[in-house]
Length: 250
Ligand code: 6PG
Image (cartoon, rainbow, N blue to C red):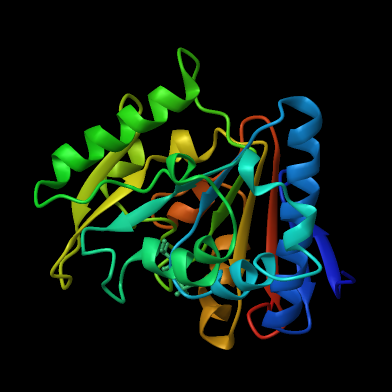
C-alpha cells in the first residue's frame, strides 16, 4: 500500500501517513500477512495481540475477507488481547466482542487458540489467570509475540495503560488491572514490558480528533508516563505508526 510520508522517529520508529482510514486498514492488513508469512518460516505458528477500541475494526474486517483471508492459514494463528474491559463479552464495550464480530467469527482459528482475557468480578484474579494463559502458551520463556496491534487514546494511553498509572512501572507481573475514574468497569492490561516483547508493534491512529495527541506523542522519543504510548519500544523488532493524514498534522 503506498503511503504519503515516512519519517524516522528517534531512530526507533517509523510513521507512515496514508490518505484515509481505509488505506491505513489496508496497510495494516498487508503487514499482518507479511508477519504471518515470516512466522510460518520461523516457527509455523503466529501470535498476534489484538487491540480494542474502534480503529482496528476496519483492519480486522479486511483480514476476514479476500484477498487477505486466504493468505493466512488461520489454524496456525494464536490470538491474544492487549487489554480488555471487565464487561460481558456480549457488551458493546468488550474488545473481544469487537474482534469476534469483525474477524474471529469469520475465520477458522481453533477456539483453543483464541486466548481471550478471562472475565471476572474479581479483576485481580482475571489478571493472574491471563498471565497464566500467556505462560502456558510461551512455556518457560518470556513472551515474544509476532505482532502487536495498538491504538492511541486521546490522553496518550494505549491498551489500558493510562497516564501516570502504577501499571506503567510494573516489571514483574505480565498483566495488571485497574479501574479508571469515570468508568463503571475494571480493565485488565498487558504491561509495557510484555507489550514490548514483540517482533513488531503497530499503532493504528486515524481521525482529526487524534491529531493533537499524536503530535505530542511523536514530538520526541523519550519514554514518558504522561504519554504511555511512548513506552512502547519493541525489544526485538520494529515499531510502526500507521496513521491517516487527518491525524497527522505535524
Ligand atoms: C481500549 C483500547 C484502547 C484503544 C484506544 C483508542 O480497550 O480502550 O485498547 O487502548 O486502543 O483508546 O481507541 P479508538 O481506536 O476507539 O480511538
